Amino acid sequence: MSAPKPELRRRAPQGEPHGWDERVHPVLRQVYAARGVLHPAQAEHRLQRLLPPQTLGGLDAAVELLAEAIRADWSIVVAGDYDCDGATGTALAVRGLRMLGARRVDFAIPNRFAHGYGLSPALVESLQPAPQLIVTVDNGVASVAGVAAAKARGIRVIVTDHHLPGERLPAADAMVNPNLAGDGFPSKALAGVGVMFYLLLALRARMRGQGAFAGREPDLGGLLDLVALGTVADLVPLDFNNRVLVEAGLKRIRAGRACAGIAALVEASQRSPAALCASDLGYALGPRLNAAGRLEDMRLGVACLLADDPAQARHLAGQLSAINQERRELQAAMVAEAEAMVALAGPTDAVGVALYEPSWHAGVVGLVASKLKERLHRPVIAFAPAGEDDAAELRGSARSIPGFHVRDALAAIDARHPGLIGRFGGHAMAAGLSLRADDYPRFAAAFDAVAREWIAAEQLQAVLYTDGELPPGAVSLELARQLRFGGPWGQGFPEPVFDNVFDCAGWRPMGERHWRLDLRDPRDGARHDAVLFNAPPGPPPPRLRAAYELTVNDWQGRESPRLLLRHVEPA
Image (cartoon, rainbow, N blue to C red; front, side, top):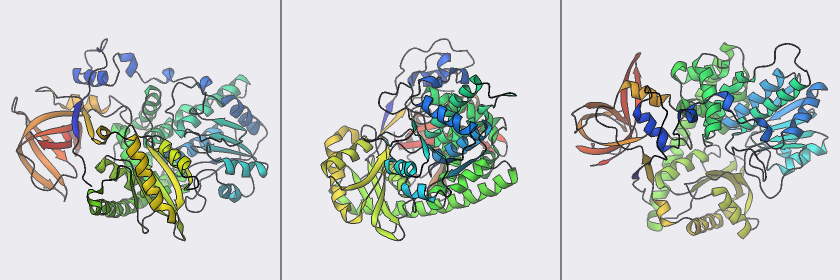
């Protein structure tokens, strides 16, 4: 099965930019226009422009129950998820509820191997003694059995989630989720941590109206570093509302006002807090937290985010970094095995690709699916045994391509083959499921069949969108800085990528698979420092077309512009 060569396509402006200060580089204005940002107001990510909480459905019932719990000093358990969004959302909920007066707040994170996903009956049973209230974060909309188990023990339940609902909703006392049918909240892109932040805002407003704050009102803005990290790491679209949240959190981190845990993660990743951007959250901090949930216990990650002592936070961040290194090594081995499987498949060319290896780790299959999806530009589901002692059940993680809604595809398979899938849930681009090991061949065929029905041939062509050529003389440190901080860039609001033709004036290998290049612009002879990671074998072509990001290279305190190549082909 061969990897498709990406087709370079240039983004077109969605209107004429106007009203910009002359200090904003014309290239950045062009980049904004290609993303529908035509006027400075559309790039002003001020907290005053955040969507008001009142339109988010379910808040009234949740706020009323939380206010009662705080007044009556109930015991509260925040039940989170074992990914970065769940960890940051859990820490946010615990910190926020304590700031608003709750005195007996604890948290619980399921172990993916012992409890399964979400608020399961097994997780509810593990809560000893039983709390009076459970508040879920980043999960719960599919926890029908878990909520029922909690209610049977006399526990009240508030569900806060952002995942798509199934046909049946749990019988929670309150449910806050912008993706419920009929919910009027304008942004459906909130991450789980964002939903929880909105609930805290509404709770504070209710308590303010009741005169609960005799002294200074709690500043929930101090929690926005957690919101930023969870939002970026969960790969939700960075619509305007999410960009407001992320930018506010980044400003806190850059100003040295992050919580001790996030500051320690920045330090452990060897990033500069003052220059931190959204990609650092997604590629350096988020994986360190996610690794705990994949290989160990995400309670370690939450403990880091709840730590107030810098020394303790550094110790926990060091442990998370060590686990992340283990995850990277395991992932590399699993991806190599997956690529070998695909190569052996030869010309069969499944459209919906399913992969299974009994030795794989269930916590890492999502990363394998993601890597193979990028290589093949096809939806991929990777499976592993559910646990070391449970080879009869498989856990699968799916990653998709634009235009193929993978959760809906699983729902279609479930309808056509009742009982084939045990549990499933997720989004358009990512989902999870379980099934019996004996049923894997039948599922693989069913997944490929749905993919063949739903995916047109042209959708299998990988496309790399660019913002066109940079004009001669445009490459500069000033432009690189403006582009770096012009976002926050991320899912749905992509990093600026340009494409130009260059002559390769020189190159040398960096490590085993990377290139360091000296590129010459044939239009004016300007020379540019460039790097390409995971380069193909052999030398670069003498004249090449490159798609690249213009980045800031910081070496020993000296900054210079650098081209980070995303794709190279002969020109």
